[in-house]
Image 1 (tube, protein in one colour):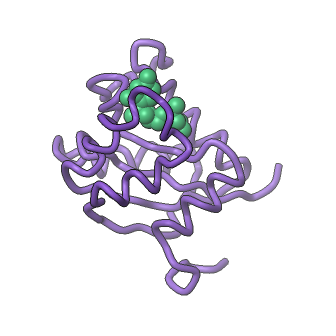
Image 2: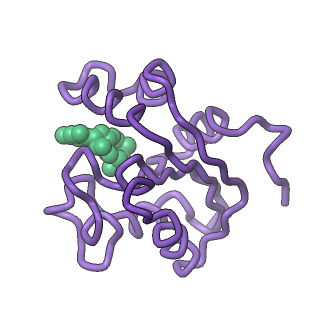
Length: 141
Ligand code: UDP
Ligand code: MG
């Protein structure tokens, strides 16, 4: 399997409940390496740009308000098949449908406040990594 990089975030509900370390630990225990990390507060415009692919969806406005309501921690994970592996560790978007032992099953408050973000494909990972980290700041193997 190819070495990939994926962009993940601890969302505001996770930061608020002191779950940063717990979320990072779950990815590390799954064998993924953290190769970049920063805390930030997204403006509403930042959140709208980050989630631009969802701009026509009914949940878009509420999602962007929520994602700009408090700090997030953005990080880049690296490893074999990192994009799919990170999504496995996260669990399904809706915590009621997330598998046992996943971050969202264990910690999500709702389908919106679901604690963690993860890129869903190589193209979105490249966009999302570039959104949070400039090429100059990104650690290179
Ligand atoms: N979301 C929501 N309601 C929905 C679907 C999604 O509030 O019905 C939010 C949720 O926070 C989700 C984010 O929008 O994580 C992005 O949605 P996506 O379908 O990309 O889910 P993900 O890739 O995060 O599992
Ligand atoms: Mg998604």
